[in-house]
Length: 269
Image (cartoon, rainbow, N blue to C red; front, side):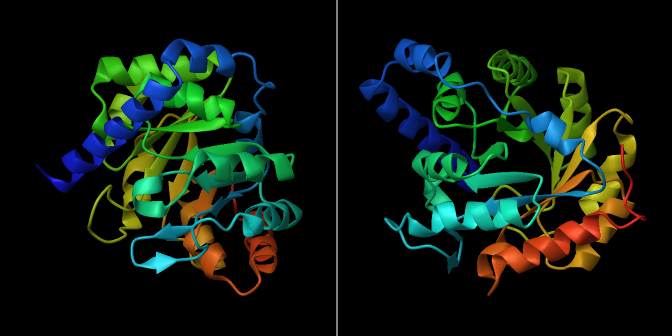
């Protein structure tokens, strides 16, 4: 079994364990009884190249927030909002990032911005679960899903009035995202497992996307120069996680990146 296969297997095992406690029909009912989703798509259409500030407890090889410590979550969310971020993302994947849906709920309750759930979503249960905890945008990893499953999960996300973000790493995956009806495509410069960051992927894939498609660049933003580079290649927004989480003053860095994204050279829709 490959590392990717093991990861998917562990994700599905986690879903099964949670579904044994809260059955699918119950989580589905709860998701449709929550407060309305915030307008994540509209937030992505704001002027310039937007900053999606990401909260993450850890990443392979680094720890930013210790397990069980919830105090920094709300504080960071407020700093990102006050810094002008267009959206806030929260890494909820537990396996590699030590995240949780509780982290996302705490962050969302602290701010008015839409919340982007960052996880490996491959089962309908996870979509309803994410909505229960306040997700407004939900990702789908195109490489992990066959086309029928991709279309089905995208439709389910939109039926809950959330924004589906189809995450791709190759032109072929971008073509499949378009065929599925994606309105928002995120190009991730980092592979699902292993490997390094390839910031050239965005410039390779972006020109092949329809003009109407909202484009997000993921991974590799460490400075205003990186943001401008992605914006020049057509990015409507960038996700910034590692750099903000390791910054001495996350709010200040957010303001700097947001100001850069409003530079006249950055395209606006």
